[in-house]
Amino acid sequence: MSFHHLCFYSAFSLSTLGLAFHRAHLVSALLCLESMMLSMYISLSIWPVENHTTPFTIIPMLMLTFSACEAGTGLATLVASTRTHGSDYLHNLNLLQC
Image (cartoon, rainbow, N blue to C red; front, top):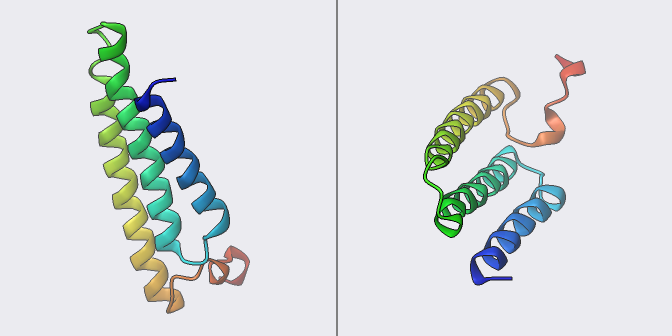
């Protein structure tokens, strides 16, 4: 296993564990999802270089675009939930209470 693979697996695993154990606030859940997307972006950026293929070089740019859209949607959800519920705790965001 190369150093790049080890970095990718450790970053993805740490962000998954962070999402599983520390999701009291919506901001921390969004940061863990963003770090998962960025670790996948790094792996998809390194993959064409390791395999010497050029047709797959557009995939990391598409993934970065989707990640930016996901971050914008997450921040809009954060602002909306903070305005309606008064906090960003995830246990307050029950749809049955609305």
